[in-house]
Amino acid sequence: KNEVEQSPQNLTAQEGEFITINCSYSVGISALHWLQQHPGGGIVSLFMLSSGKKKHGRLIATINIQEKHSSLHITASHPRDSAVYICAVVYGGSQGNLIFGKGTKLSVKP
Amino acid sequence: DAGITQSPRHKVTETGTPVTLRCHQTENHRYMYWYRQDPGHGLRLIHYSYGVKDTDKGEVSDGYSVSRSKTEDFLLTLESATSSQTSVYFCAMGTRNRGRTGELFFGEGSRLTVL
Image 1 (tube, helix red, strand yellow):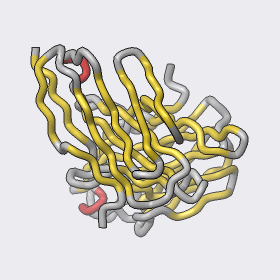
Image 2: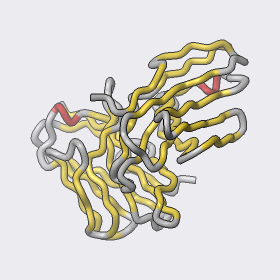
Image 3: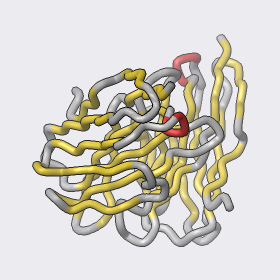
Image 4: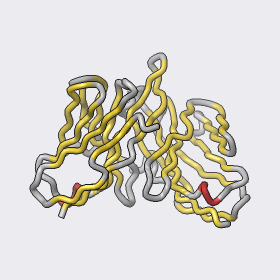
Protein backbone atom coordinates (compact mmCIF):
# COMPACT_ATOMS: atom_id res chain seq x y z
CA LYS A 1 0.00 0.00 0.00
CA ASN A 2 1.29 3.46 -0.85
CA GLU A 3 -0.41 6.06 1.29
CA VAL A 4 1.72 8.86 -0.15
CA GLU A 5 2.25 8.93 -3.88
CA GLN A 6 4.52 11.36 -5.65
CA SER A 7 4.59 12.10 -9.35
CA PRO A 8 6.58 12.10 -11.44
CA GLN A 9 9.25 9.78 -10.05
CA ASN A 10 11.88 11.36 -12.27
CA LEU A 11 11.87 14.72 -13.98
CA THR A 12 14.36 16.32 -16.32
CA ALA A 13 13.99 19.98 -17.15
CA GLN A 14 15.89 22.72 -18.94
CA GLU A 15 17.14 25.65 -16.97
CA GLY A 16 14.46 28.30 -16.68
CA GLU A 17 11.50 25.96 -16.94
CA PHE A 18 8.57 25.98 -14.53
CA ILE A 19 8.43 22.73 -12.60
CA THR A 20 5.60 21.03 -10.74
CA ILE A 21 5.91 18.03 -8.45
CA ASN A 22 2.77 16.43 -7.11
CA CYS A 23 1.94 14.59 -3.91
CA SER A 24 -1.28 12.69 -3.26
CA TYR A 25 -2.15 10.98 -0.01
CA SER A 26 -4.92 8.75 1.22
CA VAL A 27 -5.00 9.41 4.97
CA GLY A 28 -6.35 12.33 6.93
CA ILE A 29 -3.48 14.60 7.85
CA SER A 30 -2.68 17.49 10.13
CA ALA A 31 0.28 18.78 8.11
CA LEU A 32 2.43 18.07 5.09
CA HIS A 33 6.15 18.61 4.63
CA TRP A 34 8.16 19.18 1.50
CA LEU A 35 11.82 18.17 1.86
CA GLN A 36 14.86 18.50 -0.39
CA GLN A 37 17.75 16.08 -0.57
CA HIS A 38 20.80 16.86 -2.70
CA PRO A 39 22.87 13.95 -4.07
CA GLY A 40 24.90 12.42 -1.26
CA GLY A 41 23.63 15.10 1.05
CA GLY A 42 21.40 15.62 3.97
CA ILE A 43 17.73 16.44 4.01
CA VAL A 44 16.44 19.97 4.33
CA SER A 45 12.91 21.00 5.17
CA LEU A 46 11.49 23.38 2.55
CA PHE A 47 7.93 23.84 3.74
CA MET A 48 5.50 22.66 6.36
CA LEU A 49 1.91 23.49 5.56
CA SER A 50 -1.57 22.51 6.64
CA SER A 51 -3.64 24.70 4.33
CA GLY A 52 -3.39 27.11 1.43
CA LYS A 53 -0.10 28.16 -0.07
CA LYS A 54 3.41 29.09 1.02
CA LYS A 55 6.13 30.78 -0.98
CA HIS A 56 9.86 31.02 -0.39
CA GLY A 57 11.94 32.57 -3.13
CA ARG A 58 11.32 30.58 -6.32
CA LEU A 59 9.55 27.78 -4.49
CA ILE A 60 5.80 27.62 -3.97
CA ALA A 61 3.92 24.89 -2.13
CA THR A 62 0.17 24.44 -2.20
CA ILE A 63 -2.15 22.03 -0.50
CA ASN A 64 -5.80 21.09 -1.03
CA ILE A 65 -6.94 19.22 2.05
CA GLN A 66 -10.30 18.20 0.56
CA GLU A 67 -8.65 16.67 -2.50
CA LYS A 68 -5.75 15.21 -0.44
CA HIS A 69 -3.22 16.73 -2.79
CA SER A 70 -0.22 19.01 -2.60
CA SER A 71 2.06 20.48 -5.23
CA LEU A 72 5.55 21.92 -5.14
CA HIS A 73 6.33 24.43 -7.86
CA ILE A 74 9.74 25.77 -8.85
CA THR A 75 9.80 28.87 -11.00
CA ALA A 76 12.78 29.73 -13.25
CA SER A 77 14.49 26.44 -12.45
CA HIS A 78 18.27 26.31 -12.10
CA PRO A 79 20.76 23.43 -12.14
CA ARG A 80 21.29 23.90 -8.42
CA ASP A 81 17.65 22.87 -7.94
CA SER A 82 18.65 19.35 -9.00
CA ALA A 83 17.79 17.16 -6.05
CA VAL A 84 15.28 14.66 -4.75
CA TYR A 85 12.11 16.27 -3.45
CA ILE A 86 10.23 14.36 -0.79
CA CYS A 87 6.68 14.79 0.42
CA ALA A 88 5.82 13.66 3.95
CA VAL A 89 2.46 13.75 5.68
CA VAL A 90 1.69 13.94 9.36
CA TYR A 91 -1.36 12.08 10.49
CA GLY A 92 -2.92 11.43 13.86
CA GLY A 93 -1.53 14.61 15.37
CA SER A 94 1.62 12.91 16.63
CA GLN A 95 5.03 13.64 15.18
CA GLY A 96 5.78 9.95 15.27
CA ASN A 97 3.19 9.39 12.56
CA LEU A 98 4.95 10.61 9.45
CA ILE A 99 4.55 8.86 6.11
CA PHE A 100 7.06 9.70 3.43
CA GLY A 101 6.72 9.53 -0.31
CA LYS A 102 9.50 7.87 -2.28
CA GLY A 103 10.64 11.16 -3.70
CA THR A 104 10.86 12.85 -7.07
CA LYS A 105 14.31 13.07 -8.61
CA LEU A 106 14.70 16.37 -10.44
CA SER A 107 17.52 17.09 -12.84
CA VAL A 108 17.78 20.58 -14.30
CA LYS A 109 20.07 20.86 -17.33
CA PRO A 110 21.88 24.11 -18.16
CA ASP B 1 24.36 25.88 11.43
CA ALA B 2 24.33 22.24 12.51
CA GLY B 3 21.86 22.14 15.38
CA ILE B 4 21.74 18.40 14.89
CA THR B 5 24.69 16.15 14.15
CA GLN B 6 25.18 12.44 13.66
CA SER B 7 28.15 10.19 14.31
CA PRO B 8 29.73 8.29 12.81
CA ARG B 9 28.96 9.52 9.29
CA HIS B 10 30.28 6.33 7.73
CA LYS B 11 30.77 2.89 9.19
CA VAL B 12 31.60 -0.52 7.81
CA THR B 13 31.11 -3.45 10.13
CA GLU B 14 30.70 -7.19 10.06
CA THR B 15 27.57 -9.25 10.54
CA GLY B 16 26.89 -9.98 14.17
CA THR B 17 28.73 -7.00 15.64
CA PRO B 18 26.97 -4.35 17.72
CA VAL B 19 26.73 -0.84 16.30
CA THR B 20 25.64 2.40 17.92
CA LEU B 21 24.80 5.54 16.02
CA ARG B 22 24.61 8.81 17.91
CA CYS B 23 22.42 11.80 17.24
CA HIS B 24 23.19 15.01 19.09
CA GLN B 25 21.13 18.19 19.08
CA THR B 26 21.75 21.58 20.61
CA GLU B 27 18.24 23.01 20.19
CA ASN B 28 16.53 21.45 23.22
CA HIS B 29 13.83 19.91 21.04
CA ARG B 30 11.66 17.33 22.71
CA TYR B 31 10.95 15.16 19.66
CA MET B 32 13.68 13.12 17.97
CA TYR B 33 13.50 10.40 15.33
CA TRP B 34 15.59 7.74 13.67
CA TYR B 35 14.83 6.85 10.04
CA ARG B 36 16.42 4.59 7.50
CA GLN B 37 16.54 5.36 3.80
CA ASP B 38 16.77 2.60 1.22
CA PRO B 39 16.44 2.61 -2.57
CA GLY B 40 12.83 2.12 -3.64
CA HIS B 41 11.48 3.10 -0.24
CA GLY B 42 10.58 6.36 1.34
CA LEU B 43 12.17 7.22 4.64
CA ARG B 44 10.95 4.73 7.21
CA LEU B 45 10.67 5.38 10.90
CA ILE B 46 12.67 3.10 13.17
CA HIS B 47 12.06 4.64 16.59
CA TYR B 48 11.18 8.02 17.95
CA SER B 49 11.39 9.83 21.25
CA TYR B 50 9.06 12.39 22.78
CA GLY B 51 11.18 13.15 25.81
CA VAL B 52 13.95 11.86 28.04
CA LYS B 53 13.47 8.13 28.56
CA ASP B 54 10.26 8.29 26.47
CA THR B 55 10.56 6.33 23.26
CA ASP B 56 8.30 4.39 20.96
CA LYS B 57 8.63 2.00 18.05
CA GLY B 58 8.22 2.93 14.46
CA GLU B 59 7.41 1.00 11.33
CA VAL B 60 10.72 -0.92 11.08
CA SER B 61 11.89 -1.28 14.67
CA ASP B 62 12.84 -4.98 14.65
CA GLY B 63 16.56 -5.42 15.31
CA TYR B 64 16.99 -1.89 16.67
CA SER B 65 16.87 -0.33 20.09
CA VAL B 66 17.16 3.28 21.19
CA SER B 67 17.96 5.24 24.29
CA ARG B 68 17.50 8.83 25.33
CA SER B 69 19.06 9.53 28.70
CA LYS B 70 19.28 13.27 28.10
CA THR B 71 17.49 15.70 25.84
CA GLU B 72 20.38 16.31 23.50
CA ASP B 73 21.34 12.70 22.69
CA PHE B 74 19.34 9.98 20.96
CA LEU B 75 21.21 6.74 20.39
CA LEU B 76 20.32 4.01 17.92
CA THR B 77 21.76 0.55 18.60
CA LEU B 78 21.93 -2.48 16.40
CA GLU B 79 22.60 -5.27 18.89
CA SER B 80 23.78 -7.70 16.23
CA ALA B 81 24.07 -6.13 12.81
CA THR B 82 22.78 -7.96 9.76
CA SER B 83 23.31 -7.26 6.07
CA SER B 84 19.66 -6.16 5.76
CA GLN B 85 20.53 -3.25 8.04
CA THR B 86 22.92 -1.82 5.47
CA SER B 87 21.33 1.56 4.88
CA VAL B 88 21.61 5.28 5.32
CA TYR B 89 20.31 6.35 8.70
CA PHE B 90 18.92 9.79 9.35
CA CYS B 91 18.22 11.37 12.67
CA ALA B 92 15.70 14.20 12.87
CA MET B 93 14.32 16.55 15.48
CA GLY B 94 10.94 18.17 15.43
CA THR B 95 9.24 21.16 16.90
CA ARG B 96 5.74 21.70 18.10
CA ASN B 97 3.86 24.97 18.12
CA ARG B 98 0.81 25.26 20.37
CA GLY B 99 0.47 21.48 20.34
CA ARG B 100 0.61 21.21 16.57
CA THR B 101 3.34 19.67 14.45
CA GLY B 102 6.08 22.08 13.51
CA GLU B 103 9.24 21.92 11.48
CA LEU B 104 11.58 19.00 10.99
CA PHE B 105 15.35 19.24 11.02
CA PHE B 106 17.50 16.39 9.79
CA GLY B 107 21.04 15.32 10.50
CA GLU B 108 23.51 14.70 7.71
CA GLY B 109 22.95 10.97 7.64
CA SER B 110 25.07 7.96 8.64
CA ARG B 111 25.94 5.43 5.97
CA LEU B 112 26.23 1.95 7.48
CA THR B 113 27.51 -1.05 5.57
CA VAL B 114 27.21 -4.49 7.13
CA LEU B 115 29.39 -7.08 5.44
